Image 1 (cartoon, rainbow, N blue to C red):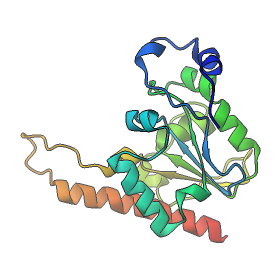
Image 2: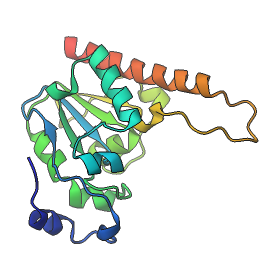
Image 3: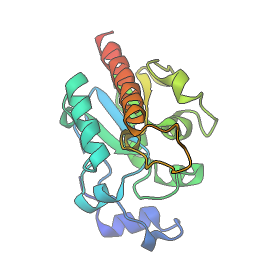
Length: 196
């Protein structure tokens, strides 16, 4: 579903610096009635340019891992919390969360929050969520939602961070291995929730 330029500008006109932001032209991607809803924070520049989610290097890695553990992403509904590369502040989320609100109206089996910021702004109304180490592999339940809510690390965390020359303890291979392990742990929780 594409949003026309006119509608997009009406939705986003209160946002400052709109001209400098890359904007995603879709409210969602995937099946409307999917049992799995994936809410990501905001689209990356590559995603805005190509009009498709998870096309960056980290996104392709996530797509592969998700397909290995759960199912192809085409069978899920993917919705961005914010439709541009804006700073994810609560005020922006309230103005731009139409796609998320529509997606949450349908009954889902599993809702995946990609990053703690999504859990914070969509379900906890700005309150600080627990650290990712505590959230990983656990199912969060909210009173207003029947679905199992699972928080995964942000997709961008699947890329290697450049080594700081002053940090001799940093090992890129071990860091990537740890991040992949965290993502796998979260995806296994998704599989478990689907089986319940």
